[in-house]
Length: 308
Ligand SMILES: Nc1ncnc2c1ncn2[C@@H]1O[C@H](COP(=O)(O)OP(=O)(O)OP(=O)(O)O)[C@@H](O)[C@H]1O
Image (cartoon, rainbow, N blue to C red; front, side, top):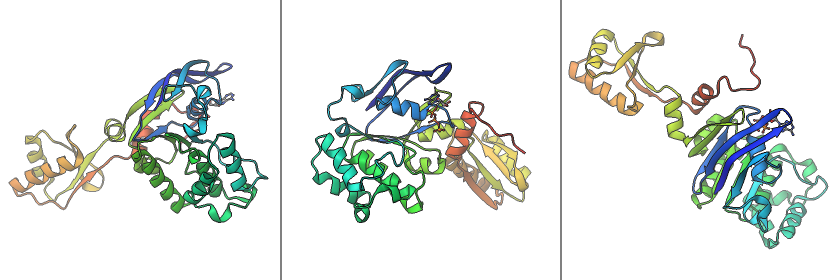
């Protein structure tokens, strides 16, 4: 478990992280979202003892990072790709890390195999692609078999196969009961990976909630209906308190919060059947994480391009 309390970081006049408090629980993949410059990397660096908070604390299983004995066996992290000695081979890099943390050398082969780098273990990371660098960083994070893992943009530079692999790895680690905290700007990928979300903007907490609730609370879900008899359908829906607005291309868009789109679609189908209204389309429209994220963080972005 990671616990952050009142965490604040100022760089001169700039407040990068501003009184953040949240907990990252075991058994789930928790996504860490925020626009560029929101303070995600600074927060992760403070959890990992790489930056000192101006005030507040960050604890890993109840202890500050600098109080952990053999920290790699408690918490593993991927921060920046290629943060390795360019002249050492992949295997030597991991062996050196293992030795300095009291990790048995046999573990090196295991993690190289796990991340699919066995065949290039004797190569120097200097010649690695971005994706290979990410895999090596993930291998280092897993080396001490820690219960807590932090990944900053782990799919950065990976091809679709690599992205798929990282997604399943995160889920597997969480299913093992580990604490998995991961940042990414790829919303579609995050939607498939994370169960819970911590969202920040300008260093402050904007949301700490489940993926499903975050989307439901911050984006519009509705049911698209097409019928040759829109007026009759509208009347039928009105009797059940369902509002149907005119949508694009002649469709109607029906909403009745807090009903979910699937439940609402079923109700609309029943009402149409009762009145004998023909339907040409009845499709639940689920809001995307991207839409919910954009709505919540709009106005909290540091650099915004003008449209048009
Ligand atoms: N060493 C530093 N000195 C001064 N300002 C810094 C320093 N590190 C970060 N900042 C500033 O703090 C803010 C938060 O940066 P941070 O890198 O934590 O954001 P982020 O959410 O990780 O962004 P991104 O998504 O772009 O990686 C930014 O405005 C950044 O410019």
